[in-house]
Length: 154
Image (cartoon, rainbow, N blue to C red):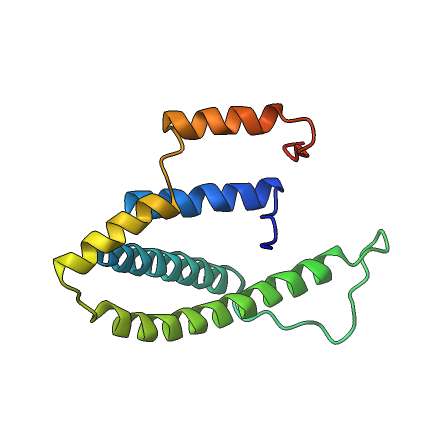
């Protein structure tokens, strides 16, 4: 018996976005282009943020001993460490994105006949039916009125 999908708000948002992307991009070619654009936009934004942080903060080196401020706190040290860690994380993200780009180039080379693209469109309609379809709306109303089904919309 299949496990029920999670009903938390984050997962529900993911499911809606997942289905929308299938509905709006129901062919192999459209999925290739969508993923390429998403990858490139992620690389562009993450790279630019890292570049700006490096310009603004340079290579932050953690001090040998925490500097104690007048109030006895070490907030600037913790902030510098957090920024330094974020910059290192962004460098790692960018490296991973370059690796993904190399793999995506191989995926982008695949071309399929129109008959296969039709199969993509057909199955996309089954995997992600239109949420505004009258039957789907009726079913959703029925499910939400059923007292034995938990409502996790919280």
